[in-house]
Length: 208
Image 1 (cartoon, rainbow, N blue to C red):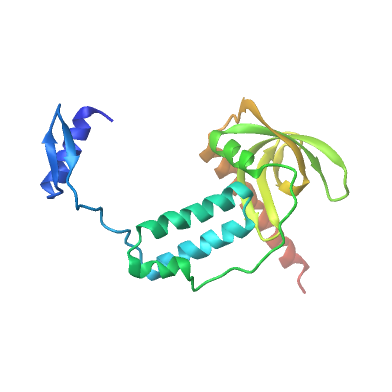
Image 2: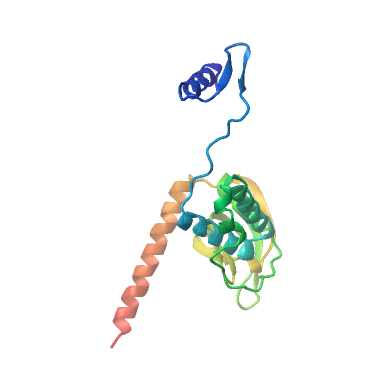
């Protein structure tokens, strides 16, 4: 951010009667007694935030679960006192689930998706057969029964889903995915739409 931008923003705040004193080149001071307005959320928005964070804290990997608790604490800290019971005494809840045992850190997969790097890992199928995969990760899906990663599989030459509880020794490679994230996601979505359409036609053909 340039100095010119800072000076313009300060001038804008002063024009809105925010009690700021000072001048360019010297510095600025926000006078005592002034607070930013409280976070303005409706009751439904608060319930949605609490319910979502509760779901993530019970079903996300440790890092994401911790982040969900931190998010609620930050929201509660800036809420008006009258609204804090929405966080401390929520009106919603999620059903308890058994934690899925994983041998990988799912946060590594999220990082690879955001950074656009290929991922290598060992994988065991339904019958226990092991294989080595190099994939282009698209997204990480969270379910009650665990997590699955959608990705383009170089071994199969197609989009596949991989259960994280069947992965071993995940490595984020230096090689980058050769397609932009939005393009890869669009190709995956088109492939999923095509697959659903095939299932729909097959179901119609088999119906009496």
